[in-house]
View 1 (cartoon, rainbow, N blue to C red):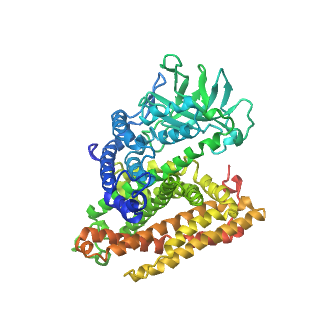
View 2: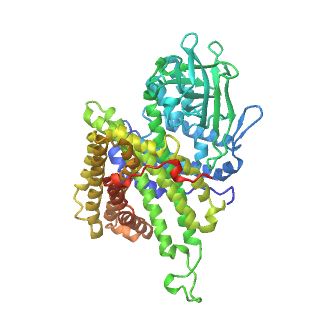
View 3: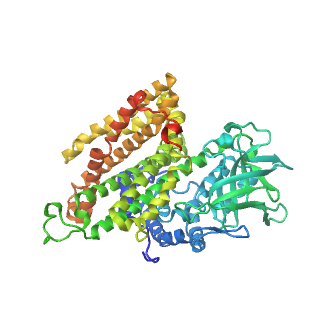
Length: 619
């Protein structure tokens, strides 16, 4: 692929359908309230701007992978050279858009923009990826001095990173060993190390604020005694304002499978001098509580990353299948005189493409459910006299959907990219197509920001209380049941009607499965039941995907009754694709909920405990 050609593909038609037809954003969110200053035309223009910048980001996608990152002898981290000019553009063209108003963009619009940017060049987007969450953290918890850094972050002159993982402390935060010792005033000295810190050191910005989990000297060794330290890479001199070295050093960059343009750094603090820090909000032992919004935002961003890259891989596969001539129709395979056809004509290739399309659309819609309820919550919070119970409902729905979006979408993105390689055949295994890099880049998503099992554990144990917290399930079912209760009998396509019953039955399986898990835990079999948490989370993701696909199909069916749409071959084909995507998913993918529910119902037999020596024979 020529480096002048963008590796990124996007369909603005799909994004506009998502915003204006599926989620009805202009009527629901732009008519009044904090987002009423701009109309649909403004956001359509914004989407075009974002698309154009994303295509430019995509032109450097492969170059960044080839160039990678290096740790130089002087301790500096060298990142892909062209990232510097891209960063200047990102800062100058987008910082005001992303931070220019009190409420910023509606979260559901932000989803579209970041899906494009992250899908086009995810390695580049790791730089500054924590700026928005950091601004939120400082606004919520910062001291007046700490809030003084917000302007530098919002203008992208500074950036931010989250530092939690240590060599001995990945998922288990009780093993965090980094220490902070009080100095004069409100400052601390810190000593320790952090590993796998994405975009942890570079020269794109004047300074980096590290939000570092550690322990004050007197803290107990548990996750409830962790504090969040705000550690600048360069310390602002209190007198001159000059930035001085703060003895934050990078000692290593791991070789890795993908995201090679992202500097994953091994950082050490306080080894060759005092590394100074402030305690976030000047509050001890509440670090995890303070950082929860940051972690939730990161998990939502993981979903945007997954949808963006997977969607591009899918669109590459469709384009390739339409132009790659190979083989003859199966019914004429033995006729050497028969003309060869594009592989899109083969039924199994159509199956793969429909599978990819339905999963991409389902994942985008699932993330849209999260972004939509976040948008709704912001509007309610800005509305005098709004019902507090409605605000709580939408905030709780956000919490419920966040681990599902992170884990389900990251698993689906890997599956979609793998299928894109398969559609390309041998070419897909080479760098002649971006899809092999797409697959390498998305694999990290099931691991970072909390592995997917951790997300499943968070869902079942923390959000749903092993089945005791029925309120969050109720909120989800209330929204789903409201859709199912609408009058869909006017739909001209009778084939859609049975899908409503199938969706209701699949949603019922979620509640039955949760009851089984609750019973197991109550009977003392928590360990055994934990082997099925990922199945339960996937059931949730499948049902939510089916929901948005069926909503999309209803919109499409309605639009296909319009004479103007029927007269436009491209528009008619677009809406028929929505119908076929839903039918495929309901017939081929949603039935997995039956399998998962069956395994959970028989977990006493399905669970299997095993030891290392039972798995491998050591000679």
